[in-house]
Amino acid sequence: MKLSRKFIGLGIAALALPAILGTALPAAAQTQHPVKHFSSGADVAAMIAEAKASGGNKNILIANDEGYPVMMEFRVKQTNASNHPTQSELVEVLEGSCVLVTGGKLVDGAIQGGTSRPIAKGDYALIPSNTPHWFTQPQGLALMTIHMPVPAK
Image (cartoon, rainbow, N blue to C red; front, side, top):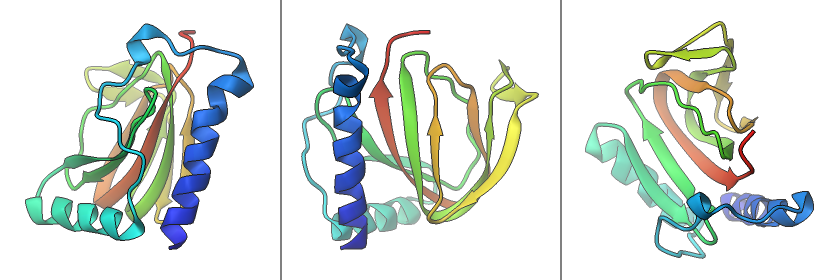
């Protein structure tokens, strides 16, 4: 139940962001995933169990509408650093831990000169659009991520 209440609150905040900012969704931010309005805490726990059983990295859709995909991202292997020029990303750590590197310069899939901070279960991070970020040293890392369209900077 606790996860469901958090999810609903975060979802409402994410969906309200364009109205608060007075921005319309850019065409590139339109829905790329199927519309899905609800996943229970038990559903998310089953997603995490499925991802663990796969033995590798896995992304599973929790919810989506209006170009706001909410994903469960499970990582046991480090991936390349990312940068989203037209999306801010809200992250909640559901399980496990990693070192989150933000800022700096994206070079050959890595970040040079960024800020590193350990994150673990219960932590949140809001990564602004056009900010390089990298989840390094994942230890059974399960994240809930919400990608929120914003105008390009």
